[in-house]
Length: 339
Image (cartoon, rainbow, N blue to C red):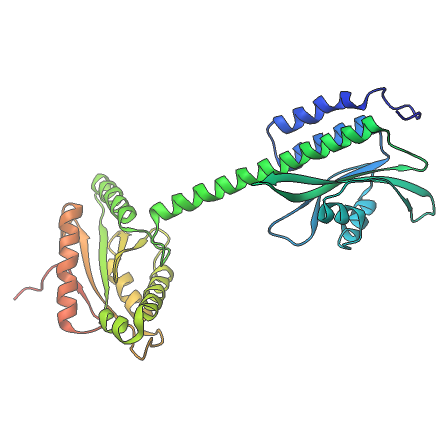
């Protein structure tokens, strides 16, 4: 036990650290609470917690005590040195107590630096480090060392839990995105397009407005796959998808419904205009595997060409068939011309 006014048992500060970790909140807030418990336990002049960030190099400062902005900035820069005690604790996974150093003003300084470690499948994984310091002389007794070791473990649990939560969120978002998008092109998939088409038709029916529906088919796609292989075919699909995404309005929806077929759901009567803009953009693409990229398109309008999704899609398919018969890179309406 120290003789400089420390509590008789520093472990009485552990409930505060446990409460901080058990509570909800941002990681920085949780680690502020953990560091505050460490400060209450051993009364350092200064302290900090650094963690490793998978998206950024080196250690990142997330909590501090007893330092002004200038000192914090200096410390954040100094830990880039692998030999710095914060960095050394994180990489070596070894705690160092009673480490003596000299401050910039020449005063003696004693620090304790502990790694933040969790075990994953029997392997210790370092997540950062916690350090506290006092003006010399200062020697930590056994109870103080045990308390700081426990606080470092709690900080590691907090960091690990935050990362697991972040990973779970990212996975959930990924699965949600995959459920609605085509993995190759990033456009809406067939199920999503179908749902949006139904919603737009219902809205147009209530408002007495129109909806345009267009189908696009890559010309001679099988020949591209045959001559250039699947990689060339995938390249064509991605390029066509990019033109589609860039050519439409914010209110429009474009999707891939399988193979080399793409669709457009466009509120209003502008479907033919948008389809021609798409065809022009695709015609300007460079050749792939020695073959030019073109698409044919069929456009249908609700309620003129169909009163529901099924009949509208059928009309667009009829227009697409006529466009193919006319030649590469053409677009035709869902209604056959008179005569």
